[in-house]
Image 1 (tube, rainbow, N blue to C red):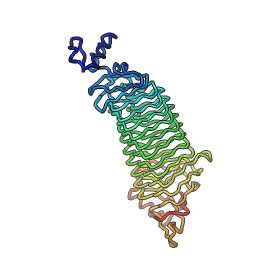
Image 2 (image 1 turned 90 degrees about the horizontal axis):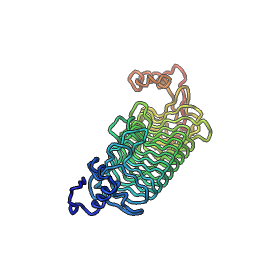
Image 3 (image 1 turned 45 degrees about the horizontal axis):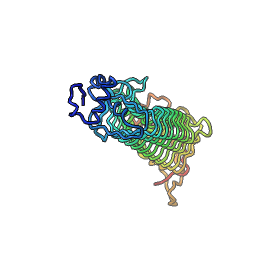
Length: 418
């Protein structure tokens, strides 16, 4: 509702009359007219500490700064328009609840991290059931702790993926819960120097990187669905992560990895589904003995390459996984192998042995040798021809009558039969 000085006061609801008088007394009437919508900041300013404000349905102008505990509840019928400048909502107090708002039209500055919602040193906030669209960054946590970000719908500006902002961005923030959000068409979700957060049951699609952890130990990533992104989960220098029960699907870019782990120790990757990706998991062998990860009970299916390793020091524990219908189960870089990892009890759909004693394990170890695939591993540009009729024919001849001893990549001494 647009305020005018000549508007009959009896036609204005009581709360808006208070705001109108506030505008007139403080000289803020001009900004009301400039934006074309009443500024929500005025209603926030008039809400007492610890109070609850439920704006009347409609469109309001931002930005808004909340500097004391309060609840702002839009009931799903309030739109807050940032006017294309800066961050739309900035929270600087503990104990704030932000619910049921549509937040839109932030600024476009990456340097200033223009966002839909910024928690700046704010703790114990509840951000739930909001819709954020046409915002560069979605929810930005900056040195913020013990907050709950749940059941929100977030998308960025309609730009190319690299020119968008993060859907959720944590910087030096810990002990937060990111749960049940639907995030699409953003750049990444980034956790930088942000330990001990829980990221649970979110849906992330059509973005560049689903989640990226950098120097962020101790996070728990569980029950999320990552679909159609360029890359799924990237873990860099972030030990003690738990990645469990997630679904990572349809990441088909030439070098896309559903999971990528680099120099991160004691990472548990357990019970995930990795389906129809260019690379299921990419990892380096640990430089230090403690830099191992545990790959257990995961399902790798319909990927170009299920597991890709670079380096040959070994040490990772890879047990109880299922490998089905992948073009290639395991690949390694250069003249290396994956023999030094702890392989045991995995199911391989290309295992050719028997289980004569019926104990559920193959009588002979499962071994993977490299034949023609050695060509494109030594010469990455030859990957274009992988699975072509000519390379398949060369592979057949190599297996039939090898001209040299094939490279043994791995040996699983107790493959699972079913």
